[in-house]
Length: 255
Ligand code: G3H
Image (cartoon, rainbow, N blue to C red; front, side):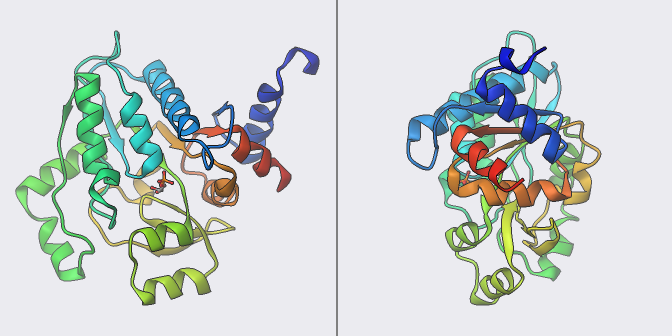
């Protein structure tokens, strides 16, 4: 295949795939920072990709955020993957209810004609509460489902934006700023070398668990997220990136 045969996006996708060492990259047109429709398109593309890999009876773990809300909005039943189970990847991270993993999980399941389980845990959790809550039979059961997930779909955020949106304490904000955290995913904050600067204490999937899951799909677009995307993939626990043109073009400037 000659370069001239590839569209501009294909070239960009290949560049990002090679540099970030990913299995698959899909770029949608536009900048989701500026237009809600672009984020919707990102969501639709994520659903198309999800349907291309999903098999009947599989478990899909999802995170929260507005990008994941767009994925849930665009969700539809698959004609080959039936009877799938949707679970939130982790417990509450301080998001508003519409941006919470539980809400997104229930909506995705409904639209996919699948089933769902929710995690009811307060956030933030103290160490003592954490230790006793993971012993609750109902929590244990869903944690088991989460660890068995075949696919994870998650957002990536800018570290400071996320910490503020989730009303993090002054202490946490300081930790994030002084540690130069750049990105956030799953309640983990990373610096530009991919080092974990802070981790929100909650139940569910932990970063280590991701290595065992075959398909980990990141959905993140917008020019403002380029640095965050670059930082998150430094620790390389996801294999697929669904992004937009603005993030992609900004991202390659830094390569
Ligand atoms: O964990 C990442 C954030 O949930 C991303 O949130 O999609 O609203 O930017 P967002």
